[in-house]
Length: 312
Ligand SMILES: Cc1cc2nc3c(=O)[nH]c(=O)nc-3n(C[C@H](O)[C@H](O)[C@H](O)COP(=O)(O)OP(=O)(O)OC[C@H]3O[C@@H](n4cnc5c(N)ncnc54)[C@H](O)[C@@H]3O)c2cc1C
Image (tube, rainbow, N blue to C red; front, side, top):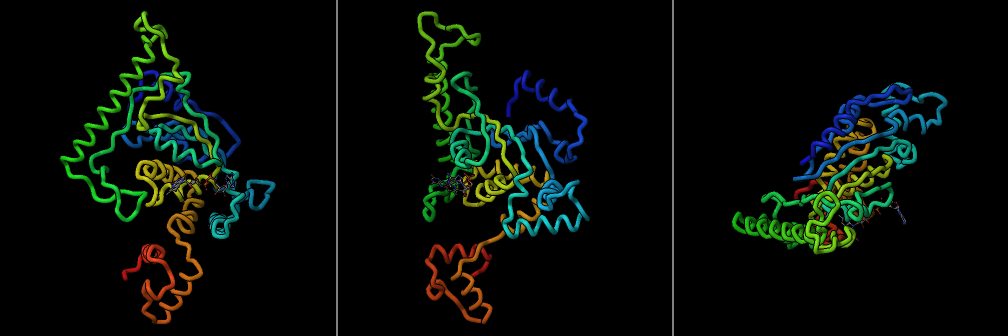
């Protein structure tokens, strides 16, 4: 992750600020506020601001006149109850704002989550840096043969070296052409005075999807949990999952009781369908149930076995 001198200075200034407030703050989150946490080769996540804490959820649930909290154990119990029964509006009282730097192909998956507020870096207005994502060799894998949306076996060393060489060459050549089209000398004047400077909004279109973009992304805790459940899941693409993993850690610092309830009832939980419940009852009754006798398709059976961690 590269930060320019000017960006380092801005971050330092942001971290040096402190404010006196009557609003609740969370010490563990304050410690990492404005701190870019590296993700992938050039990306990061940085918490810019937040509102609320575990107590704000309790306060909203109780529609309290004061801070709303009772004993820590009672509050934690209430938070668990709310999440267990998907009484989610109290968790919408907490909000968090991130600054995220991410490859464009990751941003395309991320932006599908419509319940956030987003403002993206404008490549119509500014020139994108020459920063593109190259996977580590251990993340280069062949197309999965069992899941069309996934990776299978790792590539051999020689094959992954070839793939990386190609990815790098393509990204570099695309950037060279971008720079040629922009024809910008760095001060907004044409480098080659005999040629026009193509509009930035047009020049950007030949960049590859592994180029990095940035945005501010603000979301409430309920919708953030929805995002994290989908994107921290093993089925999500590695390159978005690593961002979700960093965010899980941030949420754990921010609202530890809510995070614990989320882990318990959503992140590591598994929904049983009607048929699955019947199969579990049959198994408890001592019956040897197989996929063929379960009433489930092969795929559903595999998900059931994996979801319950069974060995059949
Ligand atoms: C593993 C994985 C694979 C995927 N593969 C594909 C794919 O191949 N192709 C593809 O196009 N997408 C794909 N997606 C994206 C997926 O279909 C969702 O668009 C994405 O996960 C956002 O989910 P969401 O709509 O629930 O989230 P959000 O947009 O954050 O919405 C949260 C919730 O708000 C409600 N909501 C929000 N907006 C509306 C609305 N307009 N109308 C009704 N309800 C609304 C819904 O209840 C929704 O669940 C994939 C996602 C994952 C995690």
